[in-house]
Image (cartoon, rainbow, N blue to C red; front, side):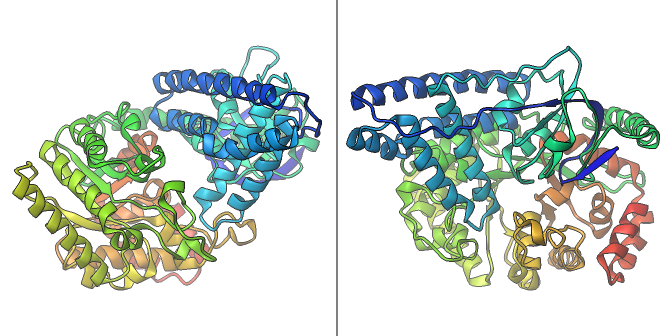
Length: 568
């Protein structure tokens, strides 16, 4: 028995034969070409064919797996068609008379190095996306197939140096029981897909390729981030017990998904979903949730080559409002900037972009962009129950200025005779220590709070969640984070406003009972987690949970807090 420790990608357990994926390295050698224009045309033919395949894969994934997984494939198609990115390597082909695959490899390495150095974990992970697309184009230009062929006909655990979302999607879902990789981070698109597909995943498991061969029996514990080759009898028995428990849980979650989220003693909360764009709304089912607790608008901007105009935004927001069928849709205004750069925005390069020019700071500085978005949201409010949420608010002045610009947009719509809801609630995303400490003040002028735990954990603990050396600090059970959440909920309720949560902590098994006990009003989670959260709420007794908060806040160490939460 050999155990390899990695990072937890997606929770769950599997005990299956391993299938080791080996792939030819995409590192072509430089060579001269006689006809540079013919070489450019060869590349463009491969590029078009790959992009068209991704389009077809997107449609197939949307129908079979859902919008969240399909949107990742769509992102790959966007990269594959990015003429601005491919302009430089093709210029090198023409100027230097060199092969296109070599020129592309040089540009790939240069751009990926730049992305990998960024502070934002989302942008760090995009380096992998760019590399994956480039590698696939290089392989195709050299006639190398990327198809994953598995022996036998049963399910397996895929073992690889790294996996692309395409790998995860293209493989027969009936045969993919989980995966473990040498490289990769917990925010990679492959991990997101694993969560969507409901399979366990472990990433960053250094040494797994040496320890495991194809056909070797492999035990995978996604929650603990470990893989065990040739497990012993005790490990096998523990897995079988856990598997039976998981199957029972899944049946309960599926049954709970269409029920109201109300505790045994009658305390009701809302369970909503997070959404990204109009495509993700095609799979939205208003019958199993209480609305959209977070509608991210940056993807609408990232899909364009120039600023989306008012009509384009209005159509997207109206689509979201109508899809919700009268239930709430919280639209977060543009959260981009810093190192989430778009070429047409001409944003500055910054030494510490995660603390820089982004989100509400950018919008209040570039008021015309903000005004256009606010007008589009307010117009769409005539078609549903829309709310506006401002991200990265750290002062009362910022909130007041944002609300004043919204009031101006309303006045303009009235003057032009354009319809809108009589009143559109406006709240803030609480995701910084500054907003936590000012939450009593901010609550008096906001209509609601939504706690963004992904950023709140990073900012509160001063932790880069992509840095493996400080992963132990990036923990939702960190007492400073839990105390911050409690403070925000208390201050929100004292001012009479509801408090929700739209970060990953809202679906954390350990935290749902605690958040319920603290009085959280709304849980906004990925669609696949709705049933689980509802079941946990419906299984709880709200009054019996009350002592949990006091006991938790009296803890002095994270280990004690975790032990307490495990008991519940």
